[in-house]
Each structure stands twice: as C-alpha cells, then as structure tokens.
Image 1 (cartoon, rainbow, N blue to C red):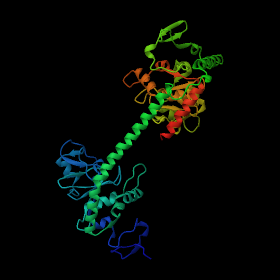
Image 2 (image 1 turned 120 degrees about the vertical axis):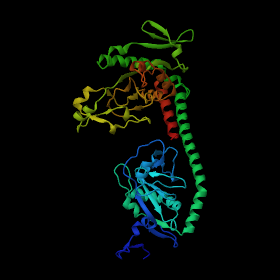
Image 3 (image 1 turned 90 degrees about the vertical axis):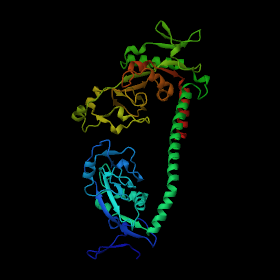
Image 4 (image 1 turned 90 degrees about the horizontal axis):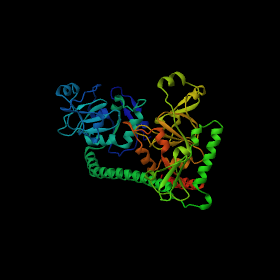
Length: 465
C-alpha cells in the first residue's frame, strides 16, 4: 500500500505513521526520530542567570540565529555559574542549541572556540555526527516545513512552546552522509546571496514606506495650500462659509447648547499694506508673522476655535472601571491607547459606560475628530469617529459647526498643522493646552472646494495603498 510504518524494537509493535510523514523523500533517504540520531537532548536549567558582564557566554533565545550563535550582545556569567549550569552536559563544538520558545524553533550550531552555557528556554542537542551532520540538522529544523510542524505541535496559550517529549520524537528526513555534505555546500553557497537580498529587500521596504509617507504629506500640504484643485468662482467664498458658521453658532447659543463666549467674532484679513491682521471686536492686531503660507483669494484664514467646538475629555480610574462598568452596554470610553497611529479608533478596546454614568463624562459626537494633545503621541494620533463616545482627558475633540469635518481632519494630518502644534508644546512630557489648540490657524476654502479637495486626497491615498 506504500504506507510508512514504525517498528518498536522493545515490543515488536508495528504502527502506521502515514499521518506524521510531511513529504516524500528519495529512496536513498530514511525517516528517523531525532532521539535515534542524537547522543543527548538535554533541557536547560529552569532558572535565570544574572548577567555578570564578563566571563562565559550565556546563550539565551535572542542569541540563537539562523544556524549560528550571535554572541555580540550576549550575557556573561562567572566560571562558578558556568559549571553549575553545565552540570548535566557541557556544550561542545558541533552541538546544537535549540530555542523552545520566544520564538520556538530557532536553532544554531556551536562553532569551534565557542565555550558557552545554556540560558532559559533552550535545549542542547548532540548528534551522532557519523550519521547526521550538525549543519544539516540545523538547516532541516530551520526549513519552513519543519518550523510549521514545530509550531503546530507547540503548546502555550500566549507563547508557542515546544514540548521536549514531542521534540525528541520529531521526524528527520535523513540522506546519506555524502549527500548531506553536498546539501550543506549548496546552502552555504547561496546563503550569502540570500542574506544580501534580505538586506536590500528590507532597505527597499523601508524606502517604499518612507516614500509613501512623504507622498502623503506632500499631497496634504499641497491640498491645504489651495494648489490641489482649481478654484471655481461660482462655488462662493470662505467668507460666506464663515457667515454660515456664525449663524449656526447663534442658533446653538439660543438653544442653550453653547455658551455665549463662542460668539466672539474673529476676522482675519489683509490690510492695505499687504499684511495680515486679526480683528476681534473693535481692535485689530497684525498677525503677519503667524501666517505660514499664502492661500487663494476665495479662502480665508481663521482660528480652529471659530469653526469647531473644541474641548477635552475627562479621566476614568481603574477602580471606576472595576466597580461601575461591568455588563451594561453604553457608549465606549476612548483613551489615547484606543487611537492608533494609523488614524483609527479601536472601539472594542474601550470600556462600555452604562447610560446612568454617561453624565459624568464628556461626549465626542459621531463624525467629530479626536486628537491626542499630551505625551509622545501628541499631534500624531488623530481619528474621525463613527459613533458617539466618552473620551479621555489627554484627547481633544473637534466638533465642526458645519459639515467641514473631513477637510479639518486632513488639515490636522498635514505637516503645517504639526509644525504649528509643536510650536505650542510645553512641559517635560510635551503637551499643548486646549487654549493653545483653539488658537491655531487653519486655511479655510469654500465648502464645495473642500469637498473636491477631500475627494482628490482620498483618491490618491487609495492609489498609494
């Protein structure tokens, strides 16, 4: 039937092992268990040895490279510790060290002159070199099919872990010794080219990522300067849009949804001297030094606070999470950890706030924008919401007064905004106060032009994927 069988010498039992055979081998090869072709397979001491800075190399899983040990940044131990850890077996030239986990499957051959001892999660293997060459065994275990089989057999809920009993019984495809030499020679010949290709491939990948990022920034910068789409006279002006915003704010104040302070008018204009001025009430101030670039005539400069309701959230303690927020579903509480650097909100990571507690939290409405304003991710974590959420005190919500949120979002992602934002950072951890955020300038096109700009940005971003 052309099936594979295993005979157990001690009992004479014969068992079909077809399900274990991963692939067919030449007729001159044999399938053997690892334990049959090794003098010893010895587990490491299950303890952590302290790095003493000098002495003998302590091989940990990070030191196990592709068939070779990497001892450049190895931990070192004294002779006493070396002898204690090698009481079961002293690692020798041509022995192999296998990583049981973190990550499982790596293996390296000890070269001449490498006098080492085993760190945690490692296994020492000493093959019968008259039957199997150490390098062949290492390359066999490092092969993709072996790595997959080892992972499939591994256990551990969070970290894959190879059981020693499974490893001892692992099947090895064994060629004649001369063919093993030929295989090793061929692999040794191509490995330098593979490594060189890997370096170039990584450099190319990093270059592509860098170029992609630079292109996106360039697109955004061109877009917010009015150089992305043509201006169309019949689409109106930003001045008309600002008047629409003013009327909406008045309506919200009458309805008691906003305080009267939002009605303070701020108008930025060019004077006869071709400089920019800001008029607040009856007073005008020259702000020419604040203007980062020129914009089309139909556009206007304004402050973020004039076109959006801007406010921070409030914190939620771990105790409140445990005591209050159990099984009742409500709005998610979103903190800085729930906004990623790809401009997404991971809602399922948030805590669900029961409705009876929602009045204790600030709400960011659907289609508003959240931005981190404190810490290392300040000005870099920015996302548009697709549902109402409660949100944290290190986040700032931008809720536009009219439907201009998408343009504002792309402005907040632009290099110009990031530069203006960073100019206002203070403190050791690097944050920007909500008052400073509100004062940051934004170039404002007419609504229809904003829509065309957003559509063009999204079209190009899709092509860059």
